[in-house]
Image (cartoon, rainbow, N blue to C red; front, side, top):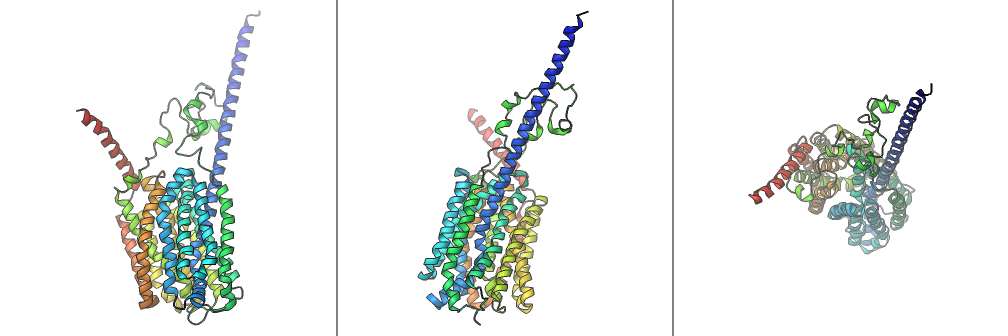
Length: 528
């Protein structure tokens, strides 16, 4: 009569044990999912922080607006011989300084992390802008150094680490993550152009017939606007640096410290014959029916290959010099930099020759920043769906067409000039979204920032010769001759895109496999 009791107790004990095991498993999965969500929040904040830093670095795009004030001040207070043809040196030297240290910025970011590297670059950048309030009274050369060269150093150091960090957080959305960060570079002018004009020219004083401002009150305010902008930039940058959380956990290419193979043993194992207790477990969160969450990239006992091992490896910096892609990117960037320096410096100065409305010109300059930000996001998204060869071909062709026809905007007055400026900034923004993403695609994300610094830095330094050419053309052939010259450079960049491979990731895999085979064959030869 009492014999069944042990069986009943044994069945009850097994049922309770199975229930406890399932409960422990669900708690473990929930804990790991919550941690994954926490890391995703940190990654999103890091992307937002990179966006804020690039908002301040977008000061570079405000030079077209500030150029008319700075050049007018220098012309009427320091040296009457200074004109717009010489002001191109400020922007060109800024780009040169940026190029000289950009690779170093990528290396510092890899060594010390994005937060401290950006803090250093931002300090140099904002401090030099504020210092220009003093140096502007020392002459043109001092302005070139404090408003051009030193801020270029700061931009070069702080430029790469934010989007390298963004691509590390979201390695399978490189184009979009990069575009969201660098979009800040275009958003900056939206606010900063209007702040500058509201401070310097609140009454909308028109320039003289020669295109230069002569109003005494306006010129008196030019040094002080440097202090205002330096303070605004530093405030934003301090907040942003605090939000640059380092990537330490869950990504598509790295396993979490909580999700290592050793932790798999801690999960209670359930027999494959047991029924599924939760719809979530039934629909794929368990990779093999044994409680191992596949989405957290945990290696199960039946799977020795994680997702990270399927991704192509990263190339070393020295390997990049052996590929033609590095030189193709450098050629394309070098040609387009000369175009960008001239357009960013001169678009407002050219508009001022037939539009006597400074507030309107500054407003359109702000909208051009919006177009730049939207364009970066758009081109980054499109790049993820297509290829460098197609997207960069479209960008360079449209850019060259707009630049070639820009002098004709004087016949269409305000509407045509505004349309062309906004279109130019929208199209050209794709360059800074596509080239870094293509660099990461070709060489990998580990050293992608440093290699991009090479592809950008060397042409940027050589851009000084482009500034000399543009100055001579501006002095001898005027607006039409100079715009025709830089439009030809755009079309040469368009032709260079046809040299780029359709699928660079396949070439990277082939190169790394070949390198591995060679390294494995060398010891065998030595033994023989």
